[in-house]
Image (tube, rainbow, N blue to C red; front, side, top):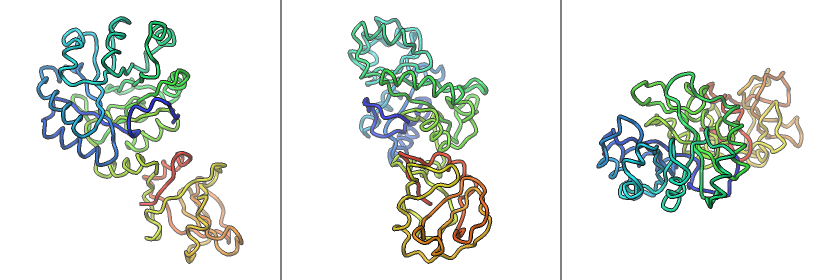
Length: 346
């Protein structure tokens, strides 16, 4: 996750909508995502199932504008030739993702009327520099990776990071896709950018893209998230990683931060000694395992009430009491708890 000067969207998270679904369904989706902190949406004029849906498309665009959701639209040479700049403007498009087949001259023409989003995987240094020489303002462009419906065709997280780091040298922010729970037809096998994310939770896939992949924005490729995932993503949109955990009830909702000089053995909550100063320590001094939530007792002197979450198995220590544990489905998230993210027990 890299801070870009070009902040095109209000939050790091977006979603996908498609004109083949009913107008009411799309409007409900837009409202659901907006209430959960999502700020932008993606749709396409290139999908064969979507063609002939211009009236529905226009209503979808209008509703996004009404709700303050930024929308970017996938176009290629065929859809550009079919609609042209005037047709795209009539549909209400304000940002276009250029998928394939447009010339440099056509791209420069589009740049006068639309925010441009390029295909991140095919945006070469030579192409960027050629467009810049012809007058394209790089501070006003973005890049977006593809999603891959067909299994075993997605990128690796390492390749994603390499592409993004190269684009960041030009200060171009980058979007990647993650799958949702309601899989989109016709294959119903998820719409991720990264192949290994195909069967991960949307939250873990998003954090992986942001932290390991160095993405700036995340877009859900499939149409809908489960209610639990929407809740979890709403926390992340505010900079917090939610952990389902067995903890004292008064700890739920408290916001903790890992130390900047983070340990490979434990997550060490930096302000917890003051946050939990009134906590009566009642745990077990036993061998500790990954995901165990531990509080230091009075024997640890000035470290009393310091909260830790174990990242690895550790031996028993009479000064450290196991208070609870992170639920197994949240344990993969422990690897992402570092700046800029805090964490919260839910």
